Length: 501
Image 1 (cartoon, rainbow, N blue to C red):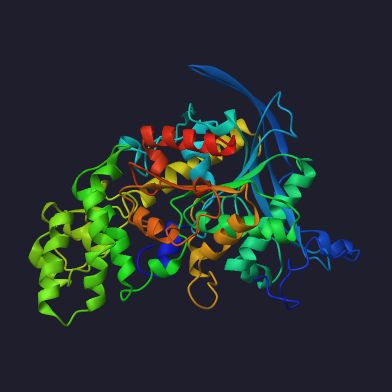
Image 2 (cartoon, helix red, strand yellow):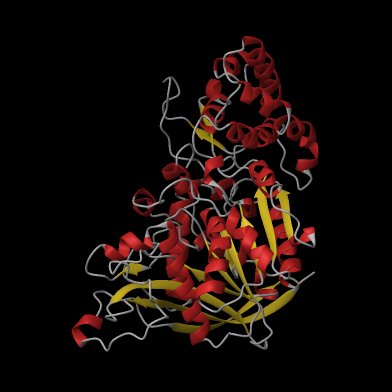
């Protein structure tokens, strides 16, 4: 999740033009009538279950219908089943479907299920994920979510193949190779969304995509794919802790990597948690985008530059100046997370560096440890989601609910070069003058630091109303919605975007 695409992919958790790419022609060519044996999949997911619910909150009551089921992806030529992609939809009762906004939610990794957004922030039920709840053995007890987005949009949570309960049905590995690639993943998700819209007759609904982490990388590409290949226009995006350009996170020779993370390190050193925390980082941002970049570009051969830069960085991030000088003023997340608490035998989470845990190897020069946020949350989230599927949604699957499938990240085909979504975002904004985007970050997230996104979107021209693309920064880390105040602020900002305000 940190210095390489594979590790970053754990945090963020083209279908080829050849015949080996099974979904390439999905929806564009009439499939041949398949033989019965070819369409009988091994171990398919159960039929859709529909249930009715009432969410009683202190200030309002929401009646809604839940759908739990799967979208079948099939080979366009033979009709052979390729995958069952699981979804959960929450639809508010008593609304006009033609006017009711519809939001599709995907998480990241690649390899992450959508439970993070569902039970973390958007859905009707929420699992607390701070304090004592931040533990693998924490009881997976959900609460009614007063910050649910159901008030202003219907919600469809999608688990890509091999995440959650979604499964690959193909008899060979060609489908998996396609699904586990940058462009093949977008193609598959585009088909899933189009099939869900068709099955539920929601063509007229205003449509939005919310993506977290690598899901934020997916967002601009998915909006473009739906418009170009599936005949579906997207009204806007909410991107939570997105990575928009992997070149800004990968490699030790890119000075922008260090400049992008410096304000988040300083936010941690200053203990900033509130919604106004960014206003207290103006001095760090000015240095990071100016003198720091200039000195980084001067290289490592001038001792005076290294002395000056190291002293300044150490002052901002609260580490020993001699330690920072040994790193030539170039402090990465792993060094910062361990060095801050080395004397106390504690390490910080890359997902929220104000959260720390015990270092299992405190006296070793290097240490390998489970992240005290990400790894601590996977078991209770998996149990809570399985419990909701079985008890609330009446959809039981005899399998493990896979919150974060690291094998997907390991096998991911990133293609040639560094993947980026900035060019897709530019095209989305340029083509549709009504298209709008909200990007949300946490101050102390080191995985996808907010200032890296700020520097990137500075390179996007306004194209009319510059407020169509907004960056908001709240207290908290990668899962910015973990904090009550940040979750409420995110909901309000998303409501304004979806309602066109």
